[in-house]
Amino acid sequence: MDKMIEEKKLSMEDAILLMKRIGYCEMVMNEIRQELYLDEIKEIIEYHQEHQNLTRLAYQSAWEFLVYRLHLDKSLEDVIVNELHFGREAAKELEELSKCVDWKRKEDDEVLVVERWLIVVDYYFSSCTLWNEEIAGLINCIVQVLRASRDNHKDILNGCLYTLRYATENRNVEVDDLLKSGAIGLYWEEMKQSTLDDRIVWNGLNIFLNISKRLKEKTDGETDETKRKELKRKIFERMEEEGYEDAIISFHEIFDFLHEKNCYAFSLNTSDYFVNV
Image 1 (tube, rainbow, N blue to C red):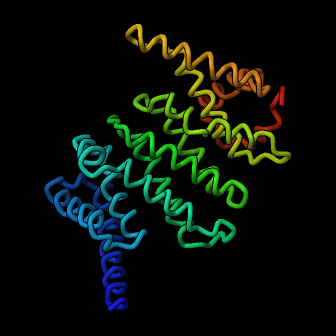
Image 2: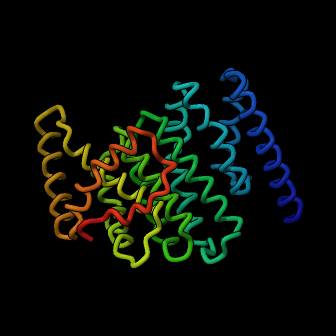
Image 3: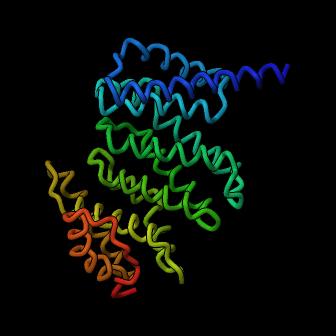
């Protein structure tokens, strides 16, 4: 019986992976009409949420199929966020994976699933304008994965920072949630390492710069403005205590130049530019 169940799961996974590939090719050539896929993909996701009938890879692929269509069809936002609960489900999957992955094995199949989830979450943060309380939990789980992988899997660590970078750029993500997640503290710890991975420096500093810019933007309403000023005071005090305030300030000009000139191809050892670390 267990063998039959496993074979059925693998068969379902193959079907979803094929559907995703076909869907992506058609999406490139033509927008797929929502009525051709939405009911079916919703049913697949909802059935798995109740019965756990898919492998981890198949479930991630089903979400990928749906989330990747956000930029073509913004009406999917409510389905993804409020009906199917993307934040809750992605957080649950990442939390479970972070506990069972063997981070010392680079070729662990579950590490691949973590990487794929992070890419989907990247796309969500860069495309979705809706927000609910579940997304704060998702950010916490990304930090949990970051914490679990940081000693043995720098690619995942950098992937987490890349995802958090997208989160800081999304105006619907609360800065307070980003700070409470502990991501800043972990990144500060990484900055103290004797050898710095240049990708980690780049993505982490973008997180700092994005938060800094957002804390400088005035908000509507007296309550929100008071909250912004208090958050700004706290984060800048922490940066000063850790000795990074001048370092971050020194990066504004070079980062603005690189963004403006699209010079990402430069062979640049970013950590060489630190002035106060």
